[in-house]
Length: 203
Image (cartoon, rainbow, N blue to C red):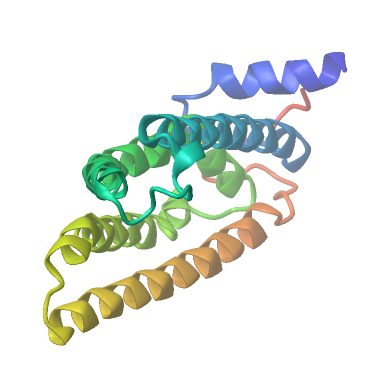
């Protein structure tokens, strides 16, 4: 356990250090911990958002006998307004989430790539797909409330649906890029010193 915390502390201490090398057995404990912590925080935020959505709309009585009445129409308007707020918040939230993953991991990923003899630029493989996918998904979803309210023509609906499918395709490319990066990060260490420095000292 002490060894694990030493590795975690070393990873945090080198959060802005893009020089040198990082051994495989030192990288993964740190990287997996960061990803799990961020995933847990993201899941907790998602649960809170769902509860907030339900509380603000009074979902408990949504399917009661008053459905179809004026009360139901008011709830539908409230849902539409709340959806607009949520979708307006999507892109900033996604961008912040991406940044929270990049900041603590980027330096460690670069040093791990250095340890395999590769340049740190390989770490950028998933980034274009992440940014473009967030943009497409946010742009498409932000138009949902208006589409539901105005009932636009079929070509407009088709364009939005097409945009969503393109975003899904970009997401699949992002997954493929992440898999390629993980494979590179699992590469063997260069046994001797190279242009990135001497072999890392075990932590």
